[in-house]
Length: 94
Image 1 (tube, one colour):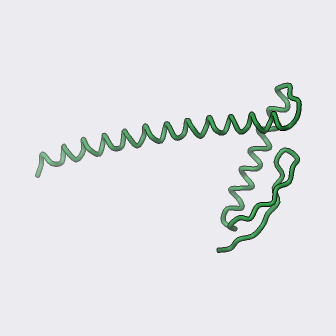
Image 2 (image 1 turned 45 degrees about the horizontal axis):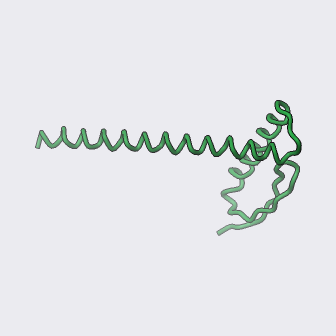
Image 3 (image 1 turned 180 degrees about the horizontal axis):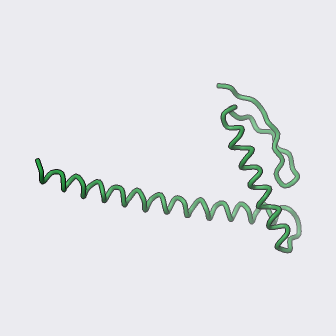
């Protein structure tokens, strides 16, 4: 395990994270996307402090996550159905 510490900045606050080297690019990309979303909200809505913006980004990401899980489940069900149908079709030729 090639573990090391990085510091990332989200909403003008620094966070030290202990990560695997292979995770670094993904984490830095995620931080960049979070900060980009925070900036977009800051430019388009009235807010009291950055916590409001962080909360909106968290909500947006959770909704996206829920939708992805739902879509994944639907795709898995479709694959299962197609597998069963294919298996039944092939069994006719045995």
